[in-house]
Length: 392
Ligand code: IFM
Image (cartoon, rainbow, N blue to C red; front, top):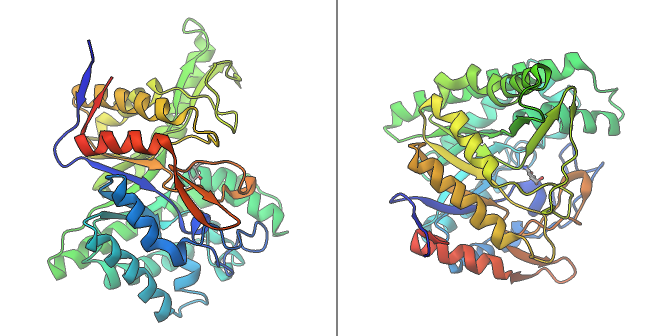
Protein backbone atom coordinates (compact mmCIF):
# COMPACT_ATOMS: atom_id res chain seq x y z
CA UNK A 1 0.00 0.00 0.00
CA UNK A 2 1.23 3.48 -0.82
CA UNK A 3 2.54 5.49 2.08
CA UNK A 4 1.48 9.14 2.12
CA UNK A 5 3.43 11.79 3.97
CA UNK A 6 1.57 15.03 4.50
CA UNK A 7 3.56 18.20 5.09
CA UNK A 8 2.44 20.98 7.42
CA UNK A 9 0.14 23.69 6.16
CA UNK A 10 2.05 26.69 4.78
CA UNK A 11 5.14 24.56 4.22
CA UNK A 12 7.61 26.36 1.96
CA UNK A 13 8.55 24.50 -1.20
CA UNK A 14 11.39 26.19 -2.97
CA UNK A 15 14.86 26.11 -4.35
CA UNK A 16 18.05 28.06 -3.77
CA UNK A 17 20.86 29.78 -5.67
CA UNK A 18 23.64 32.23 -4.85
CA UNK A 19 24.61 35.36 -6.73
CA UNK A 20 28.11 34.45 -7.85
CA UNK A 21 27.03 31.03 -8.98
CA UNK A 22 24.20 32.18 -11.26
CA UNK A 23 24.09 35.90 -11.97
CA UNK A 24 27.05 36.53 -14.25
CA UNK A 25 28.93 39.77 -14.65
CA UNK A 26 30.37 39.92 -11.11
CA UNK A 27 33.77 41.46 -11.62
CA UNK A 28 34.59 42.97 -8.30
CA UNK A 29 34.57 40.11 -5.83
CA UNK A 30 37.41 38.05 -4.41
CA UNK A 31 36.39 35.14 -6.68
CA UNK A 32 36.19 37.18 -9.90
CA UNK A 33 39.80 36.99 -10.99
CA UNK A 34 40.80 33.66 -9.52
CA UNK A 35 37.77 31.64 -10.53
CA UNK A 36 35.89 33.80 -13.03
CA UNK A 37 32.29 32.78 -13.57
CA UNK A 38 31.81 35.00 -16.64
CA UNK A 39 28.16 35.23 -17.58
CA UNK A 40 27.35 32.22 -15.35
CA UNK A 41 23.63 31.55 -16.06
CA UNK A 42 22.91 35.17 -16.92
CA UNK A 43 20.37 35.12 -14.10
CA UNK A 44 21.09 38.80 -13.48
CA UNK A 45 19.24 39.51 -16.73
CA UNK A 46 17.00 36.46 -16.93
CA UNK A 47 15.69 36.34 -13.37
CA UNK A 48 12.07 36.91 -14.41
CA UNK A 49 12.22 34.03 -16.80
CA UNK A 50 13.68 31.86 -14.03
CA UNK A 51 10.94 32.93 -11.61
CA UNK A 52 8.29 32.02 -14.21
CA UNK A 53 9.84 28.57 -14.36
CA UNK A 54 9.93 28.38 -10.57
CA UNK A 55 6.21 29.15 -10.55
CA UNK A 56 5.55 26.65 -13.30
CA UNK A 57 7.21 24.13 -10.98
CA UNK A 58 4.71 25.00 -8.21
CA UNK A 59 7.33 26.40 -5.87
CA UNK A 60 6.29 29.08 -3.40
CA UNK A 61 9.71 30.18 -2.10
CA UNK A 62 13.12 31.15 -3.42
CA UNK A 63 16.41 31.55 -1.61
CA UNK A 64 19.07 33.70 -3.26
CA UNK A 65 21.93 35.96 -2.24
CA UNK A 66 22.64 39.63 -2.70
CA UNK A 67 26.11 40.21 -4.08
CA UNK A 68 27.88 42.51 -1.64
CA UNK A 69 30.51 43.51 -4.20
CA UNK A 70 27.77 44.89 -6.46
CA UNK A 71 26.12 46.87 -3.67
CA UNK A 72 29.31 48.23 -2.09
CA UNK A 73 32.00 48.09 -4.80
CA UNK A 74 34.24 50.46 -2.86
CA UNK A 75 34.28 50.76 0.87
CA UNK A 76 31.38 52.80 2.24
CA UNK A 77 29.91 53.68 -1.17
CA UNK A 78 26.64 52.03 -2.08
CA UNK A 79 25.65 51.60 -5.68
CA UNK A 80 22.07 52.81 -6.20
CA UNK A 81 21.69 51.11 -9.56
CA UNK A 82 22.43 47.72 -8.02
CA UNK A 83 20.18 48.43 -5.07
CA UNK A 84 17.39 49.03 -7.55
CA UNK A 85 18.23 45.81 -9.35
CA UNK A 86 17.64 43.68 -6.25
CA UNK A 87 14.49 45.65 -5.47
CA UNK A 88 13.17 44.61 -8.87
CA UNK A 89 14.17 41.01 -8.14
CA UNK A 90 12.31 41.05 -4.83
CA UNK A 91 9.27 42.67 -6.41
CA UNK A 92 9.26 40.07 -9.18
CA UNK A 93 9.04 37.39 -6.49
CA UNK A 94 6.26 39.22 -4.65
CA UNK A 95 4.26 39.63 -7.87
CA UNK A 96 4.40 35.88 -8.31
CA UNK A 97 3.41 35.16 -4.72
CA UNK A 98 6.81 33.65 -3.96
CA UNK A 99 8.35 34.09 -0.50
CA UNK A 100 11.93 35.36 -0.48
CA UNK A 101 14.81 34.17 1.62
CA UNK A 102 17.79 36.47 1.17
CA UNK A 103 21.35 35.45 2.04
CA UNK A 104 23.74 38.28 2.81
CA UNK A 105 27.01 36.37 2.59
CA UNK A 106 27.33 33.36 0.34
CA UNK A 107 31.10 32.86 0.06
CA UNK A 108 32.00 36.04 -1.89
CA UNK A 109 33.41 39.29 -0.56
CA UNK A 110 34.06 42.63 -2.22
CA UNK A 111 37.68 42.76 -3.31
CA UNK A 112 38.42 45.74 -1.06
CA UNK A 113 37.47 43.70 2.00
CA UNK A 114 39.28 40.56 0.84
CA UNK A 115 42.43 42.67 0.52
CA UNK A 116 42.01 43.67 4.15
CA UNK A 117 41.86 40.05 5.26
CA UNK A 118 38.13 39.39 4.83
CA UNK A 119 36.40 37.89 7.83
CA UNK A 120 39.75 37.22 9.50
CA UNK A 121 39.94 40.97 10.09
CA UNK A 122 37.88 41.95 13.14
CA UNK A 123 36.74 45.11 11.32
CA UNK A 124 34.71 42.80 9.08
CA UNK A 125 32.05 42.68 11.79
CA UNK A 126 31.52 46.41 11.39
CA UNK A 127 31.69 46.24 7.55
CA UNK A 128 29.26 43.34 7.35
CA UNK A 129 26.72 44.76 9.75
CA UNK A 130 26.85 48.13 7.99
CA UNK A 131 26.12 46.42 4.65
CA UNK A 132 23.40 44.29 6.28
CA UNK A 133 21.80 47.32 7.91
CA UNK A 134 21.69 49.08 4.57
CA UNK A 135 20.00 46.03 3.05
CA UNK A 136 17.43 45.94 5.79
CA UNK A 137 16.68 49.64 5.41
CA UNK A 138 16.21 49.18 1.67
CA UNK A 139 14.31 45.91 1.60
CA UNK A 140 13.12 45.15 5.13
CA UNK A 141 9.48 45.37 4.12
CA UNK A 142 9.73 43.13 1.08
CA UNK A 143 12.01 40.34 2.33
CA UNK A 144 10.38 37.41 4.11
CA UNK A 145 13.47 35.72 5.61
CA UNK A 146 17.07 36.78 6.04
CA UNK A 147 20.05 34.45 6.18
CA UNK A 148 23.13 36.21 7.45
CA UNK A 149 25.83 33.69 6.46
CA UNK A 150 25.91 30.63 4.28
CA UNK A 151 27.84 27.65 5.66
CA UNK A 152 30.14 29.68 7.93
CA UNK A 153 32.38 26.73 8.73
CA UNK A 154 32.85 25.66 5.12
CA UNK A 155 33.64 29.27 4.38
CA UNK A 156 36.20 29.56 7.17
CA UNK A 157 37.90 26.21 6.68
CA UNK A 158 37.69 25.62 2.92
CA UNK A 159 36.64 28.61 0.83
CA UNK A 160 38.52 31.46 2.52
CA UNK A 161 41.81 29.48 2.78
CA UNK A 162 41.51 28.41 -0.86
CA UNK A 163 41.07 31.97 -2.04
CA UNK A 164 43.80 33.25 0.20
CA UNK A 165 46.26 30.80 -1.28
CA UNK A 166 45.20 31.43 -4.88
CA UNK A 167 45.15 35.20 -4.41
CA UNK A 168 48.72 35.08 -3.18
CA UNK A 169 47.60 36.68 0.05
CA UNK A 170 49.54 34.16 2.10
CA UNK A 171 49.10 30.61 3.23
CA UNK A 172 45.97 29.53 5.05
CA UNK A 173 46.72 29.24 8.74
CA UNK A 174 44.87 28.06 11.81
CA UNK A 175 44.77 31.47 13.54
CA UNK A 176 43.11 32.99 10.44
CA UNK A 177 40.52 30.21 10.40
CA UNK A 178 39.73 30.68 14.08
CA UNK A 179 39.53 34.45 13.71
CA UNK A 180 37.20 34.06 10.75
CA UNK A 181 34.86 31.87 12.78
CA UNK A 182 34.97 34.27 15.73
CA UNK A 183 34.17 37.25 13.49
CA UNK A 184 31.43 35.38 11.66
CA UNK A 185 29.78 34.68 15.00
CA UNK A 186 29.99 38.35 15.97
CA UNK A 187 28.79 39.48 12.55
CA UNK A 188 25.74 37.24 12.78
CA UNK A 189 24.94 38.33 16.33
CA UNK A 190 25.31 42.01 15.52
CA UNK A 191 23.15 41.75 12.39
CA UNK A 192 20.40 39.94 14.27
CA UNK A 193 20.45 42.61 16.92
CA UNK A 194 20.37 45.49 14.42
CA UNK A 195 17.59 43.92 12.32
CA UNK A 196 15.41 43.38 15.37
CA UNK A 197 15.97 46.91 16.59
CA UNK A 198 15.11 48.37 13.19
CA UNK A 199 12.13 46.07 12.75
CA UNK A 200 10.77 47.14 16.11
CA UNK A 201 11.14 50.80 15.20
CA UNK A 202 9.42 50.34 11.86
CA UNK A 203 6.90 47.76 13.17
CA UNK A 204 7.95 45.21 10.54
CA UNK A 205 8.16 41.48 11.08
CA UNK A 206 11.66 40.09 10.77
CA UNK A 207 13.10 36.56 10.64
CA UNK A 208 16.84 36.20 10.74
CA UNK A 209 18.59 32.85 10.51
CA UNK A 210 21.72 31.17 9.27
CA UNK A 211 22.34 28.46 6.66
CA UNK A 212 24.34 25.97 8.66
CA UNK A 213 26.05 23.01 7.02
CA UNK A 214 25.59 20.08 9.38
CA UNK A 215 26.53 16.50 8.63
CA UNK A 216 25.51 13.15 10.02
CA UNK A 217 28.53 11.59 11.74
CA UNK A 218 28.54 7.93 12.76
CA UNK A 219 31.23 5.71 14.29
CA UNK A 220 32.52 2.96 12.01
CA UNK A 221 32.53 0.67 15.00
CA UNK A 222 29.95 1.70 17.60
CA UNK A 223 31.84 -0.36 20.18
CA UNK A 224 35.10 1.51 19.65
CA UNK A 225 35.66 4.23 22.24
CA UNK A 226 37.93 6.17 19.88
CA UNK A 227 35.46 6.06 16.97
CA UNK A 228 32.70 7.29 19.26
CA UNK A 229 34.93 9.96 20.74
CA UNK A 230 35.80 11.24 17.25
CA UNK A 231 32.11 11.34 16.34
CA UNK A 232 31.33 13.27 19.53
CA UNK A 233 34.04 15.81 18.72
CA UNK A 234 32.85 16.23 15.14
CA UNK A 235 29.27 16.71 16.27
CA UNK A 236 30.40 19.24 18.82
CA UNK A 237 32.75 21.27 16.64
CA UNK A 238 31.18 20.89 13.18
CA UNK A 239 27.48 20.76 14.00
CA UNK A 240 27.02 22.42 17.35
CA UNK A 241 29.80 24.91 18.11
CA UNK A 242 28.65 27.76 15.88
CA UNK A 243 24.94 27.36 16.61
CA UNK A 244 25.56 27.23 20.35
CA UNK A 245 27.16 30.65 20.13
CA UNK A 246 24.32 32.30 18.25
CA UNK A 247 21.27 30.35 19.45
CA UNK A 248 19.89 33.29 21.44
CA UNK A 249 20.13 35.38 18.28
CA UNK A 250 18.32 33.15 15.82
CA UNK A 251 14.72 33.22 14.63
CA UNK A 252 15.14 30.00 12.67
CA UNK A 253 17.83 27.53 11.73
CA UNK A 254 18.60 26.86 8.08
CA UNK A 255 20.05 23.41 7.53
CA UNK A 256 22.21 22.67 4.50
CA UNK A 257 22.47 18.91 4.43
CA UNK A 258 24.74 17.02 2.05
CA UNK A 259 27.01 14.68 4.01
CA UNK A 260 27.08 11.49 6.04
CA UNK A 261 30.52 10.65 7.46
CA UNK A 262 31.53 7.34 8.91
CA UNK A 263 34.51 7.73 11.20
CA UNK A 264 37.13 5.10 11.89
CA UNK A 265 39.42 6.93 14.25
CA UNK A 266 41.14 9.14 13.19
CA UNK A 267 39.95 8.98 9.58
CA UNK A 268 36.75 9.65 7.66
CA UNK A 269 36.03 6.51 5.67
CA UNK A 270 35.50 6.66 1.96
CA UNK A 271 31.90 5.67 1.32
CA UNK A 272 31.36 2.54 -0.66
CA UNK A 273 27.65 3.03 -1.16
CA UNK A 274 26.02 2.47 -4.53
CA UNK A 275 24.42 5.86 -4.88
CA UNK A 276 27.14 8.34 -5.67
CA UNK A 277 26.67 11.75 -7.27
CA UNK A 278 28.70 13.10 -10.19
CA UNK A 279 30.98 14.66 -7.57
CA UNK A 280 31.48 11.29 -5.88
CA UNK A 281 29.35 12.30 -2.91
CA UNK A 282 27.34 9.56 -1.26
CA UNK A 283 23.56 9.89 -1.36
CA UNK A 284 22.31 9.09 2.14
CA UNK A 285 18.81 10.48 2.76
CA UNK A 286 18.47 9.01 6.23
CA UNK A 287 21.21 11.37 7.40
CA UNK A 288 18.95 14.39 7.08
CA UNK A 289 16.61 12.86 9.66
CA UNK A 290 19.46 12.47 12.17
CA UNK A 291 20.78 15.95 11.40
CA UNK A 292 17.29 17.31 12.09
CA UNK A 293 16.93 15.40 15.34
CA UNK A 294 20.23 16.89 16.47
CA UNK A 295 18.76 20.36 15.92
CA UNK A 296 15.55 19.68 17.84
CA UNK A 297 17.09 20.79 21.12
CA UNK A 298 17.30 24.40 19.91
CA UNK A 299 13.49 24.55 19.76
CA UNK A 300 13.51 26.82 16.75
CA UNK A 301 11.74 26.60 13.40
CA UNK A 302 13.93 24.84 10.84
CA UNK A 303 14.10 25.33 7.09
CA UNK A 304 16.14 23.03 4.90
CA UNK A 305 18.03 25.83 3.16
CA UNK A 306 19.98 23.47 0.85
CA UNK A 307 19.92 19.84 -0.18
CA UNK A 308 20.73 18.62 -3.65
CA UNK A 309 22.80 16.43 -5.91
CA UNK A 310 25.21 16.86 -8.82
CA UNK A 311 23.52 14.68 -11.42
CA UNK A 312 23.92 15.77 -15.04
CA UNK A 313 21.80 12.93 -16.41
CA UNK A 314 19.03 13.38 -13.85
CA UNK A 315 19.25 9.70 -12.95
CA UNK A 316 19.34 10.16 -9.17
CA UNK A 317 17.55 13.41 -8.48
CA UNK A 318 13.96 12.20 -8.25
CA UNK A 319 14.88 9.41 -5.84
CA UNK A 320 17.19 11.81 -4.01
CA UNK A 321 14.41 14.33 -3.41
CA UNK A 322 11.82 11.75 -2.44
CA UNK A 323 14.22 9.96 -0.14
CA UNK A 324 15.18 13.11 1.71
CA UNK A 325 11.60 14.34 1.93
CA UNK A 326 10.50 11.05 3.30
CA UNK A 327 13.05 11.28 6.14
CA UNK A 328 12.15 14.93 6.71
CA UNK A 329 8.54 13.76 7.03
CA UNK A 330 9.61 11.30 9.67
CA UNK A 331 11.43 14.03 11.61
CA UNK A 332 8.28 16.16 11.44
CA UNK A 333 6.27 13.24 12.80
CA UNK A 334 8.72 13.23 15.69
CA UNK A 335 7.98 16.88 16.33
CA UNK A 336 10.93 18.54 14.72
CA UNK A 337 9.55 21.88 13.56
CA UNK A 338 10.54 21.79 9.87
CA UNK A 339 8.77 24.50 7.91
CA UNK A 340 10.25 24.40 4.44
CA UNK A 341 12.56 22.77 1.92
CA UNK A 342 14.78 24.61 -0.57
CA UNK A 343 16.32 22.31 -3.11
CA UNK A 344 19.83 23.11 -4.29
CA UNK A 345 19.53 24.32 -6.91
CA UNK A 346 16.89 25.97 -9.09
CA UNK A 347 19.26 26.02 -12.07
CA UNK A 348 22.61 24.47 -12.93
CA UNK A 349 25.36 26.82 -11.83
CA UNK A 350 29.00 27.62 -11.19
CA UNK A 351 30.24 25.17 -8.57
CA UNK A 352 33.08 27.33 -7.20
CA UNK A 353 36.56 25.87 -7.83
CA UNK A 354 34.94 22.97 -9.73
CA UNK A 355 33.53 25.28 -12.39
CA UNK A 356 30.47 24.57 -14.52
CA UNK A 357 30.90 20.77 -14.66
CA UNK A 358 28.70 19.66 -11.76
CA UNK A 359 24.99 19.95 -12.54
CA UNK A 360 22.85 20.59 -9.46
CA UNK A 361 19.88 22.20 -11.22
CA UNK A 362 16.24 21.24 -11.29
CA UNK A 363 16.54 23.15 -14.53
CA UNK A 364 19.31 22.44 -17.00
CA UNK A 365 21.28 25.34 -18.45
CA UNK A 366 22.77 25.30 -21.90
CA UNK A 367 25.74 27.62 -21.29
CA UNK A 368 26.13 28.34 -25.01
CA UNK A 369 22.61 29.60 -25.60
CA UNK A 370 21.46 30.22 -21.99
CA UNK A 371 18.44 28.12 -22.79
CA UNK A 372 16.64 26.65 -19.78
CA UNK A 373 15.20 23.14 -19.82
CA UNK A 374 13.17 21.66 -16.97
CA UNK A 375 14.51 18.28 -15.89
CA UNK A 376 12.00 15.42 -15.35
CA UNK A 377 12.85 15.22 -11.63
CA UNK A 378 11.77 18.85 -11.27
CA UNK A 379 8.29 17.87 -12.45
CA UNK A 380 8.15 15.20 -9.76
CA UNK A 381 9.24 17.73 -7.15
CA UNK A 382 6.55 20.08 -8.49
CA UNK A 383 3.90 17.42 -7.95
CA UNK A 384 4.95 17.03 -4.31
CA UNK A 385 4.96 20.80 -3.78
CA UNK A 386 1.59 21.26 -5.45
CA UNK A 387 -0.06 18.53 -3.40
CA UNK A 388 1.90 19.29 -0.22
CA UNK A 389 2.37 15.57 0.18
CA UNK A 390 4.66 12.76 -0.85
CA UNK A 391 3.16 9.50 -2.05
CA UNK A 392 5.56 6.59 -1.83
O1 IFM B 1 27.09 25.04 -4.56
C1 IFM B 1 27.23 24.88 -3.19
C2 IFM B 1 26.64 26.06 -2.45
O2 IFM B 1 27.21 27.26 -2.83
C3 IFM B 1 26.85 25.89 -0.96
N1 IFM B 1 26.40 24.60 -0.49
C4 IFM B 1 26.82 23.44 -1.23
C5 IFM B 1 26.54 23.62 -2.71
C6 IFM B 1 26.98 22.36 -3.49
O3 IFM B 1 28.34 22.15 -3.30
